[in-house]
Image 1: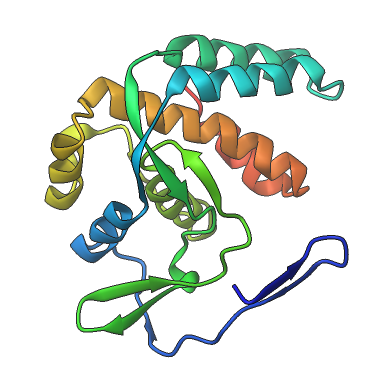
Image 2 (image 1 turned 180 degrees about the vertical axis):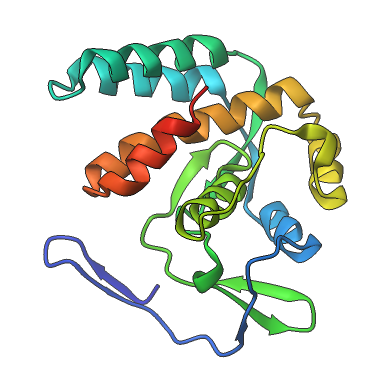
Length: 196
């Protein structure tokens, strides 16, 4: 990013040459996640869940049924286990990912990026946005069918299957709020239908 003026809604960045990566999740994608880890920084689902509880409490326009659904999801995932903190790209989607060298993935459009995020949030966005836009069935919850590179990542960072599922559910609740903030009603409705 070369320049950002949030008040004017302007962001300038360098151009990145390369071919788009496509819709398949590869080991290069997972290798890219490794680069987002913040050395010596940790977080927990509990920290992030607490922030979403505050959003629910302070929001006046969430109907009762949705509010109940969100609260039940947060209750199910509130967990104090220490996790590695990462930079979350926030827009890790196929059209923002390019091959910049042999098996080297680069990301563009960093406007949604934030630090101290939970691991795998970009992975879940990558999978769910495609499921929504391309009308694909995705079963992010099925840990028995994880790509080997993702399973290796989980093992390296001591993220078990239950923790993985909690991280996925956190993504959904957080993505619902972010969709509401962007007035993306179609994605918000899709995300809400995925919260089980």
